[in-house]
Structure formats: C-alpha cells, structure tokens
Image (cartoon, rainbow, N blue to C red; front, top):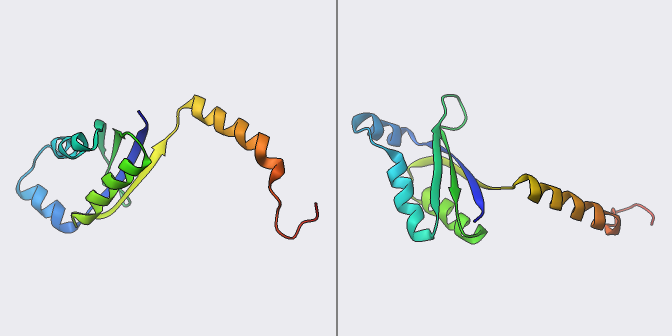
Length: 113
C-alpha cells in the first residue's frame, strides 16, 4: 500500500483546545484513516516555525490521500495541511530509468530539433 507524508500546522484555536484538554491525537488520526482503508504508521511533533507535526500514513491510492487531506483541511483546525506520496528506493530507480528513456522525446519550446 502506498505511503504518504502529511505535514500540518494547527490553528491557534486548536492549540488552545489542546492545552485546555490534552489528548492523544494519534487516536483521532486512526479513526479518520480506518474508513478510508488506511492506517497510521507514526505521528511526530515538531517545534519550530513551519510545521507542528508530521504523519506517515498508508492509504490505498492518491484519490484517497486527497480525500484525507481535504477532510483535514475542511475542519478548520489547521492553518495548513500538505500530503505527499513517498517513494521507495526501488520506485525512485524505476522513475529515473523511465525519465532517462523518454527524456529525448520532449521538445523544448523554441529550440531546434
């Protein structure tokens, strides 16, 4: 099953609610992933200026991954959410071979053949 990396930044209101009533956010992620046919591999928290946390999740496909991100965004609990598919080393090698093989076919605009 494909793996996806999701980064997120909570809204100020979400942080205020977490401080008032701390809880295990992995449970909330798992409850959302299960009906999508996915699962949570891990959740890590960051302290810095950009993201508050990252999740690595297993989801069936990119359409489902987009649904996951859309549900998170529509809650209003986040300032930002981004999801990216992760490739294995083997998938990267296959990508590079394919790019090498089809690269000569592309015609750069304004360049002679």
